[in-house]
Amino acid sequence: MSDSPHDPRQPFRRLGAARLAIGLVAGLALWALNEADDRTLWPATVPPLFGALVMVAVFLPFVLVGGLGALRVRTLALWAAGSGAVLAALGAHDLSRMVRPVDDPSVSPQLIVFGAAGLFIAHHLVEGADAERRLIARFPRYFEIAWKHGVQLALSAAFVGVFWLILFLGGAMFDLIGIKAVGELLQKDWFAIPATATMFAAAVHLTDVRAGLIRGIRTVALTLLAWLLPILVALATAFLLSLPFTGLDALWGTRSGAAILLSAMAVLIVLTNAAYQDGEPDGPVPPVLRWSGRLAGLLLAPMIALAGYALWLRIGQYGLTPDRVVAAACVVAGLVYAAGYFIAAVRPGRWMRRLEITNIVAAFVSLALLLAVFSPLADPARLSVASQMARLESGTVKADRLDYAFLRWNAGRYGREALVGLRAGGGEAGKRAAAALAETEQRGDAPDAVLLDAGHLPVIWPAGRALPDGFLDQQWARDQQRSCTLGADACQAALLDLTRDGVEEVVILNGQRAWVHGRVGGRWRFLGEASLWRPGREADGSLVEAVRKGGIGARAPRLDDLIIDGERYFVTPDDSPSAAVEVPTVPSPAQ
Image (cartoon, rainbow, N blue to C red; front, side, top):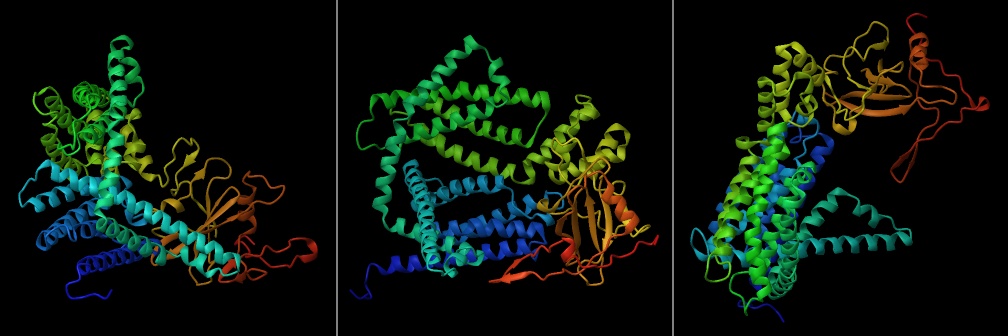
């Protein structure tokens, strides 16, 4: 059948084309940002800008794809502009709070996860309000939209997974007959990222067109989840009734009591909503579900009280940490749910009706908390550093017990600023802060790690030389950082021109390894490493002494590398006497 001017399929086709275009553009943008990150190009060299662009490229397409056809054009434009600005601000703050993020401009996983949750909540608040032309829509509208899009996202993710499974299967079939191009294409970022984004947009459109299919799957999923509610309610009731006999010491001793209780509360809330649905059931709700829902509403109050008390004890004993700040925000949201569901459970009338207003209020509260936690207002790192410094100043924690590693590695620029202040103040805290600031790699539990500073990185070749200016000031990318070990084979440095460009590279000798760093684009980068191991040679410092006495040099490879289908393969020469070729080394100044 040919299309006619009044073909009812045309709006859906135009909508599908628009969604595919958005997915393709988003994929290309993500690929470009990935390339900039890998190659250290602009905008990856400007971390706040890079963070803003990543958040917009990742999440704004969801707003556009989900809003097309569901929101009025004016509403969609305003919502896209507003959400894009907020996402950009959060991404910029996330990278600006890090210490020297230019070497690793990656948006934190926490912001990605919680940002997705916040955007999901906000989008459905906007879509529901726009559908009913009012500031706050009725709960059934929110329920319908949120669960529809939730099922759509799950099905779309599964669709993309099957899409890639088919592509890999096709690549394997071509590989059987010697055609490698298909399999190699799938490994290319310039293909994989745009293809994934485009197919996800296509899946969203296909599921949107089949609204009846989505509604059927949603109904089945909610029915199954609802009948899990009595099981969890029984377990939670038994748990709370056991506490008077077991006491709370065992609960506090787990150090994860608050997290477990908050997780159980979240599941209880989801299952209760699965049983309640939109509040307008097609038939009577089974008695077991009605009583389970009311009991769940009552159980939330003691559970949030225990979680809050457990968190308050931990903060009182050890102060704030980023995890505890996030947990505190969850407790605040949990209090809203617990209060509202308690009222819904005890209030007479239609079953759990007050649950509706509670969910709407909790959605707005959760959004406010998310914005506060991922902005300077209640930045977990900032609040944690302030808490730890207050404990030090008050004498609650002594200078030798302060967690300097946390300030150096897990508190962003706030922790670094605190360490700088402690270093300026001198004393035991100042000494330990200076040592922490000098670290270039997180040591974890390794007791023998030392710092790459001037005291542990002397230049032994050429004698009397110093490290190039700015070398020790660089914060290398995490996967390029290298630690040194105490002992006879502690790190030493040699200056050699290994790239034959007239500019010396820094070769760090550590035991039986050598790490080469050079300037690329005005910045120091890790170029490669070599094994210095030879049979019979122990890691006892003899190699370092040999460098001091006999010098160290460089020579071109005896055998060129093999290039097969564009890939480089290194050839290891035969070092037996019959194949040996005398190549002079660079003499030392002493010679």
